[in-house]
Length: 210
Image (cartoon, rainbow, N blue to C red; front, top):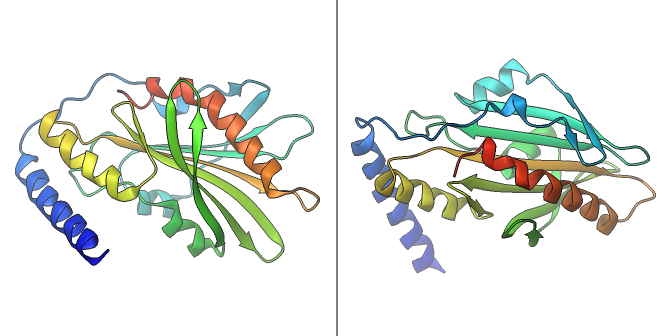
């Protein structure tokens, strides 16, 4: 395990050096739509935009961000967050939700990875967070170049590889949160989040280019 961690650190350090050397080259970025144009209607879900707080925007850095609450009759809401960074060479990089949410008072209580089946197979992060008696179910993953990745380390590895091979450092974080009602079990909330994610997934390529 220590050797594996050492290898990861070496790869990331080497990748950082590569990225620094590549900064002088203009990046190649395919056309894409602004995330604000993401569909407000996803199946039976209707979305309402939520303003991003200035202090949060400052932490996130330069990128294209969407916070939207989707609601469907008879169901708890789904909080959809899409953060797209056209470049990660200038210091603005993707932040893991595992670092951000605990800072808001939410404590992770259960973390695992599950398979998301849509137009393609993908493994995503799923965890439960709690604040007092309240619980929420979270799904999130990293997406770039048509690739969906759960691991933050693999996301950084592909960032380096794509910067060298394709002259691109763009990427996105997709996060879906839904509350676990007091009379609801975790499995029900997980299924709701998965159903929404599977319906949203086919739309993402327009906003996170392959």
